[in-house]
Amino acid sequence: MIVVGLGQAGCNVAKAFSKFPQYQVYTIDTTAEADITIKKQNSHEDYDTHFPDLSKKLQFSNEEVFVVVCGSGQISGACLRLLEQIKNNNITVVYIQPDLDLVGEIPRLQEKIVSNILQEYARSGALSKIIMIDNGCLEKTLGPMSIIGYYDTLNQAIVNTIHMINVFKNSEPVIGSFIEPSEMSRITTVGIVKIDASEEEENWFYDLQNAREVVYYYGINEDDLKNDETLFKKINSFVKSKVGGNINVSYGIFKTTYEQKYCYCIKYSSVVQSYIELLDDQEIS
Image (cartoon, rainbow, N blue to C red; front, top):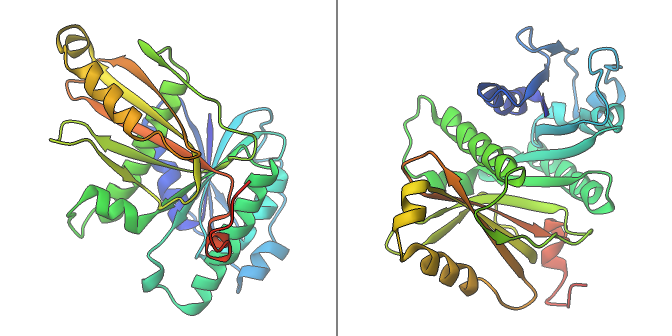
């Protein structure tokens, strides 16, 4: 798989994928440290207008590609131009939403524009999907963190979760079955379930509304798979408790070599998230 980071935040997340051998990483930014350095522009619009031709540097096609971008940065204005140049691939955008209470009016407007456009791209099928990440939700999931290494901790959580879901999608479960999401359900987020707690607790990385499909990927070591006679009932009960309304729920249990049990999850929606407030409780088709 190929990971392309755009801008400082996108590059930092992309570089965190490098610890896994399955990913080839490209970083694009205005700094000399980036794999591909582009000229710094004065505005969001200028990045769109003056984005260079990178076809000689991004020479891949028919690949699984993850593009990582944070919408509040000016360089996110180049995102559509980048996507156009690599369109002959199966593209997933990993979209990072910063704490919007801590950014100015212009970055907040830029973020809204980029977020809406990329979700519309996903919904139309121009993208395989978009994975929405809200740093505020992620921080609540991870709990207290030190100042030094704060963003590294957030980035590692994003990367580890997406990577393990990729691994499970390409593995055979010990037990379980999966429901394919509908063609329109391309707006997604990921999360984790704390299964060693007294009650299993979902922690999503974005407050995704109007979900239509949810998938749980359980990683269990061989010893627990053989000897924990209560585990299957516990997992089954939890998954069944999430079934309701118009939501389709599925899961798989996979054998791992890790001592700790864990569960990663992904949910899908067909609704551009900023439009939720305009729906006024109308039925979503």
